[in-house]
Image (cartoon, rainbow, N blue to C red; front, side):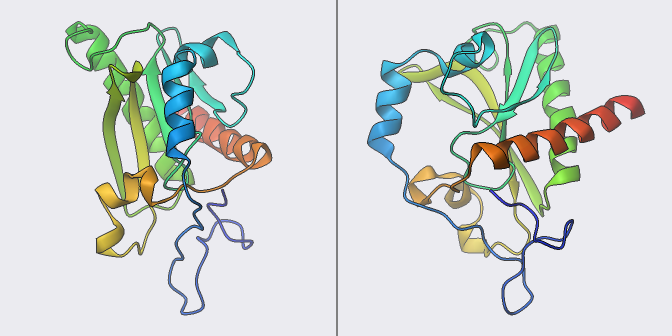
Length: 189
């Protein structure tokens, strides 16, 4: 998943000089359902270091939270933030202090994402289901600049519209840049 052109810090551009949309490939929804409903909780698996989660590079971790790259990004630089404790409901499973602590973490990680990934807007949302992906998690989804309006909002978030193919090497690179940005943000606070 390239979030920058070969020029370094500039977003990739099409032949008209406009920011280009990332290449996407079809999403295997049936495989995803099998993985999420038949396998372990993906957040808990990442926390225990289970094999098979090389794309979900951890970019932030503290006593209470973890932030990692999305295995199935629909936008470059998509990151998930979750509490380490296996809680399932975005509000009622957290007391006010835990909820506010989680939201401060989401904000901090979002600032790092925005420092590294060109975006014209960042979407924040909590998704999941009691039928799969039950562990509470927030999505940080940076919308690439120049995305046509018809391809923004829910369209941009839906895996059914394709996911960005990427490699473990690309995940390691992006995770390293996000960790560096988070370290700078931590110094400023």
